[in-house]
Image (tube, rainbow, N blue to C red):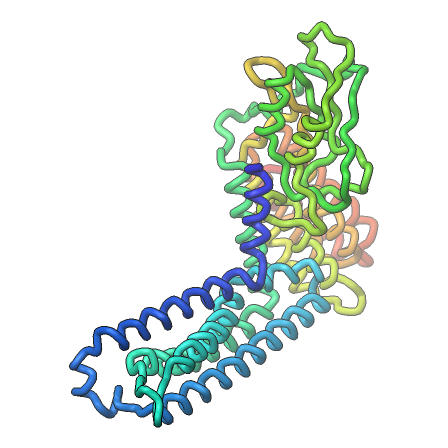
Length: 442
């Protein structure tokens, strides 16, 4: 249940309607509160400012009607500009950044502001009475509507600036980097203290002797967004089980594909395990599956987005080396941060008994995801090889264990070999060789 609530909250925050919905509710509450104050308190100081609060019923209706109609028009304009920006950025860089624009708090706030002012004016309009009716003009509420309209001009100017800034590739890559590093802080909060961390040690326990595995198939298809590993450990401990994950975060799961396998633990005398449908559903519920990947629990997805932008920049139709170099710099920042972090062990135990065999990317997996495809797509481009070399040496400086150094050194060697194979002139090859000699530590 906790896993489902957490995933629901992630999806809610990423929706385009949640923040505007809250702002609409707040505008209704403020409108009703101001109307109630105007109808009951009747403050005498309003009469001292007739030019400010002395608007009649017809004038108040006309002004609020104009504000409401203009706010709805501007809201439609803001929504149209957002969609155009998203379409342009998705076509030019990568479709995977579409959700980043939807999750943008500034876009959500601007859309929410205009529709909430529209709602505020409608609520106040229906209470104005004049002519043969009982005369009532909520002066404070009308004045508040005017101030909100003036504020809307400032919000519109801010929104145009924000859209223009958000379309810059440096801003897009920076925002993805920030979100990915926030995910790194959440998923791997501890830095390596002892270089021989749990991840670096070879597992002394193996599941090879376990033969009678019971498969837990998925009942729907999609990408694994989150796995409650602590919940799996607790469930396995309560039922004396060993759980082996077959799908990890970010991987696609087809209907009927195996999510996990379970067996009796090695201390149990049972040869085979049976499990009720209710408990099977409990295990499935610890895997969150949806139609898209998210950065919050999936660091690899953030890396994947930046890699996709770099690959699009290096494509023959665009050939934008500068953008690709910017992406390599940001990838180095993320991988360098990961190099300093302690990653969980593959086998998770409870009270000394192995309970869960997890399936999560290692540091080497993250490194290969970040640099392999860029190296291949950057064939015959000495500037790409030069920056890859520089970035990899920065990552090597961040590494605090021999195993991670080996993974980075393997990438450096691949860059050197690929440069020798694809660069056209000896001048370019000599530059890469000189770069390799000048960088310290290799």
